[in-house]
Amino acid sequence: MQTSTLSQSSLAPAATGLITFEGARVARSAYSAKYRTLSVRGRLVENVSMPGVGEVLRLPGDGVTINLSGFMVFPGLINAHDHLDFSVFPRMGQGPYPSWREWSTDIHRSEESRIAESLRVPLETRLSFGGIRNLISGVTTVSHHNPFLDQVFRGDFPVHVPHGYGWAHSLAEIHKVVERFVQTPPGWPFILHLAEGTDQASQREFDVLEHLVPLNEHLMLVHCVGLTPAQWETAVNSGTGIVWCPSSNLYTLGKTLAAEQILKLPNVALGTDSPLTAAGDLLDEIRFVHEELGVPARFVYDLVTTKAARLLRLRNGEGNLQTGSKADLIIARDRHHTPAEALIQMSWRDIELVMEQGRITMLSASLAERIPVELKEGMERIFVDGVGRLIRAPVQKLLEQACLSLERTPSIGGRKLALTEANSRPDCGHQPSLERSPIATRNDYFSPEVMNLRDDCH
Ligand SMILES: [Zn+2]
Image (cartoon, rainbow, N blue to C red; front, top):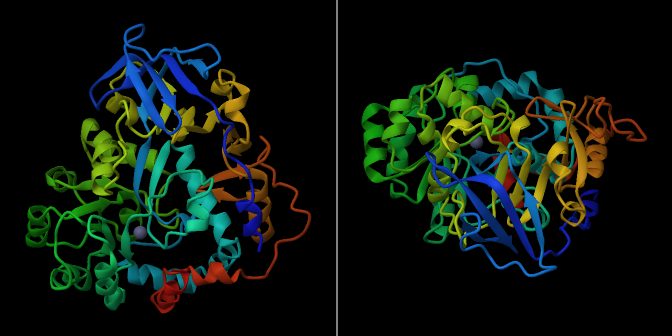
């Protein structure tokens, strides 16, 4: 299998001691950013302190100091819902549809050849591109709605994929909902698509679910567009978590949740869903819910940091930059806004550095100049819509593998990927292969007819 070559890549950064960022404003909350010196050692933030006050003692030869004057440091973003394996798919469907069922039926009929083409890309390669799609937009943690694959996600994957979750696709596989819910350890979230539709069948799903599993803060329901006001009230009062995927909902259903509904929820987060239905990336989603749907900037900030961390039960300080938290951070130019105001104006082009668990995983060309060589070791260059980035992923191998299967330029979320600025296809050496990857087809779940195949992946 081609996938084994990726697993063998040695992409971990060289061992370093202390990494100290100085001269930047550091986001302390949605409202506040202060000039701080931020030190990282290993996977953790070792210290965040006022310049010259209480800084970590830096011994000669112990690590590196990076001047970030003119920049702002934010916590790494958390994407509460994606299907990383659908990364190389184009957007499909001509909605609005009454529910995801009609959408699925339609695309399997009308998009058969493009589905087959995308599925020819090996599963591990598609998952990696899903990680890259998130990485480029400043996401450090992604909740992946499909089986957790140890050999992929525990290695040098571009983003952190939490493994502690139970899941089922939806009530379309009702027997699996109960079976897997019972198997999910206490304290883990149980994640399920629910009421992804505006028809009566979607509306009934909540009532059915109530009889299957307890409604509480351990349950994470994705979409919930079809809930009635009474069902909504029950969900809110029970503390049930809800993941909002607005651009995906509007594309498939022509409708999504209203800002007033979202603002009342105790447990809520924002997710992109996959490029099959979503527009762009998490930053596009963030701008959209603020500008078009009227969600206040401070609330949007929390949706992709602290609220998402709580919903996904992340326990290592994700979503917050403080001493002892996991060193997940992103860096952008400081335009002298609050962190929340800055975030709702950002696009992927503004993200200049991503650090995940203390390793630099993405760099812009301009910021790369300030970073010592040893911290960039193992990173490879990629061009996204002609914009260069250094990322910690085997770019050349991934693009070559995608080119073996695709008859179009590889793209993620509508953005073209290339090894060179000219957006040229990498030299694959031969024509796209017509051979289907058995794993790829086994992991395809979006048609009810093939859902039962997904159990094979566990
Ligand atoms: Zn989904």
